[in-house]
Each structure stands twice: as structure tokens, then as C-alpha cells.
Image (cartoon, rainbow, N blue to C red; front, side, top):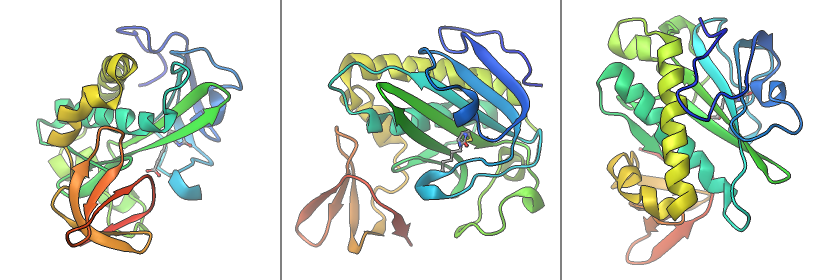
Length: 240
Ligand code: BTN
């Protein structure tokens, strides 16, 4: 049950819950203060990255949006990686399994995407939307994913307490966000490197192919394109 939350820190004050909404990215409101969290059990128009939709049957997943007010002069797009790292921590605590981050915003468990992060900039505020597939059965996961998605349930064989996963998510997000405020992505570099799903893989991004060296301290994907080093700011990745 996600109706109420006992915030462990600053995030979740205030906590906005509705059983159903179009998208928690809208439920959070036009001008939310930092730490505001919006959650619902069913989204009728959930938003994914690159204009895609994000769907899950009522009561099976976590849909949450968090308002962040990063310091001026910082790169707000880096916050999707911060959110992915927090979601990876929360999934790892729940499952006791090693969880990875796939640049720029996916969370992977056993090569399946179990969570995604969407950052939307509104004035100086970033609304960070995080979706985690928790208790969907295989049949309830999106059939049209280019690569089959997973949920904590399909990958561990048991159901998980969404409230606990949400509480850990917000706690870890606050922790990593504070690290990022202090020291930028460089402060999270060891954590991101340890969870880097793409490192060493052969990928193609926007027509450029290469082997992934890693994620650099500015959150860019570093590619070796055959002796030449290329830095990718954003894009759609395909990998083998
Ligand atoms: C992606 O991987 O494409 C990002 C998915 C982000 C989904 C979350 S669910 C909570 C928040 N509300 C939305 O409408 N989208 C984000």
C-alpha cells in the first residue's frame, strides 16, 4: 500500500498520493518545492523516455516523481543517472542480487530492464520520474519492448513490498543527490562505474559503433571506435 509514506529524510515532504492519475509527472504540480514526491498506483498516460509510454497494471509497480532544485550552473540532465543509481540500490536491497545501470537511465537485473528514469526540466526544477517494475507477472510486462523487460517478481520468483522499495528508493536518492550537489557526478563515479552495464559491450548509438569504455565524470558514454575515443552526450543505444 502506497497511500502513506513515513519519510526517512527530506524527500517525501510533502507526499502526494492518488490511486490513479495520468502521470505522476503531472500529479506533482506546476511548481513543486524540492523534496515533493508524487506517487500513484495506476498511470493512464505514463511517460517514458523519447516520447514512449510507460504502462503497468494497477498496484503492481512503483510510479513516482520527485522534485529537485539543483544549484544554478549544474547540468540537470546528470540527474537521470543519479536517479538510476538510487533505483539500482533500492532493487538490490529488495532482491539481494547485483543490479546494473544501463546508460543513460535504465536499471538492469539479469540483463532485463526493471526500472527507468525520466528527467523533465521545468524552470529551475527537475522533475525526476522513476518507474520500477515490482510485482508484474511475465504476462503483465509490456509485450512490445524491443528487449523483454523484467520485474522483481519475474526475476526472483517472489512478490515484493512496494512500500519498502519506495522508501529505500527515496532514501538512496536523497543520499546520492546530496553527493551530486557536493561533488557532481565525479562523486558518484566509483558507484556508477561498478554498476556500468554497457562497459566492454559493442554498441551503436546514433550511427556510431564502438566498444564502451565507460561513463565519464560528466555522465557521457565513452566509446572506443577502433583506436579513436568518442564521447556521446545522449542517444538511443543498441547493443549485442
Ligand atoms: C524510461 O525508461 O523510458 C523512463 C520511464 C519513466 C517512468 C516513470 S513512472 C513515474 C513517472 N511518471 C511517468 O509518467 N513517467 C515516470
